[in-house]
Amino acid sequence: MVVWGGLRPIAARIVFDVVAVIGLSYSTFSLVENDKSTSEADESNGLKKKKKEKKADHTNHWNGLVLVASLVVTVLTAGNFTNRWTLTFPMVPIFILQGLRRIPVLERNRWTRGIICILSGLFILLGIKLSILFPAVELPPVEGPFHVGTVDLHIPVTNKVTMELGGNFTHLPIRILYPTLEKPNPVPYLTPATAIEYCRETMKLGAPDPIQNFGWMLHTWRLTHIQAKEQAQLIPPNGDTTTSSTGSTPKFQKLPVIIYSHGLGGTADIYSCTCAFVSVG
Image (cartoon, rainbow, N blue to C red):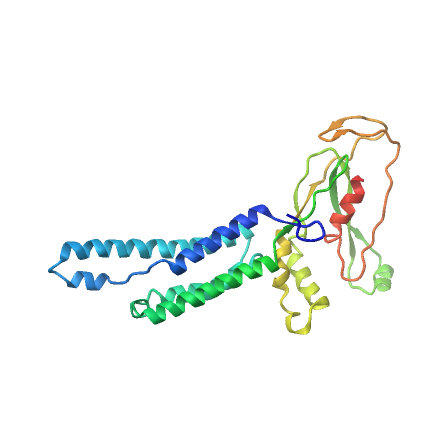
């Protein structure tokens, strides 16, 4: 299923999100019984009450375990708490509300129990809606006779260049993408070391004033990868027809070189997909 511009939802992420929603729904709408003390007090019907007490403990155990597991699975599969904030943020009030259900007086009162379930359900629906509005997507696969190799370099620059560019830096980051026969691996779309800072600065640059400081809203990008091979071997030159998974390489003498410079607010990361298509076309 294509979302927009060739982007597709990450299939594994959809599975984990659905599992989390099911777990939250189970924890919200399953029974939480807290009548252990009452069952122990009734000696005249001890056997029957002990069975009820055992059932209550079992319900409490699974209810809380599934709730915690939903959060743990979401955070671990996303990498951290904010990468899938569309679900983890609504989970916070759900945890608080479900914690209140463990208070016997609130759970036994049908009105308070109903209000807690309704509020928890609304937060679950909010998480579903946010996950649809801010989906975790994958970039379209690079199609061509070769795979994509990539190398990141940091070229030292002189003080004169630094002054002309109006910055305060000593090295210029450069990403080289080129054709290769080596099979690609998932490479993070945003460089992990600078991803958080980039998301924060992007929000400041293009978002409305009320949300300019909410850089975590773009952390879903950190789940996206491109298919490339870091430090891969360049395709054999001069007519070597070593076969790849897509067929024989064509004969050529030289490889063309294209220099792409992004505009204001851009980085080599976010234009890697575009340049990857050019590198193997």
